[in-house]
Length: 84
Image (spheres, rainbow, N blue to C red):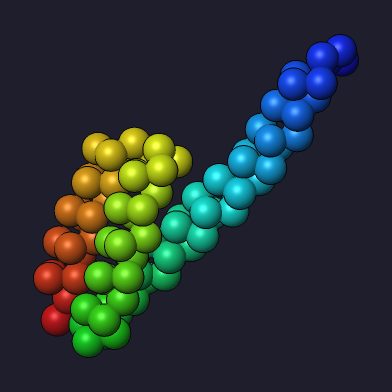
């Protein structure tokens, strides 16, 4: 266990950040999954900008890598454009 005050504070901060990042990442995964399972083109077109914005924010905060965000956005856009 840490002995210094600053180390104890760092442990507390790290745990809070870890849980927050986990929540954001899980929310993004759920949003991507919902969009992938969408069959209606109008609904998917409406959801796409929100999901893209979410992925961009996660990439900006380094919760996911920027290339992963770009790949997901590309694949989701192709999926939405391919819907009948």
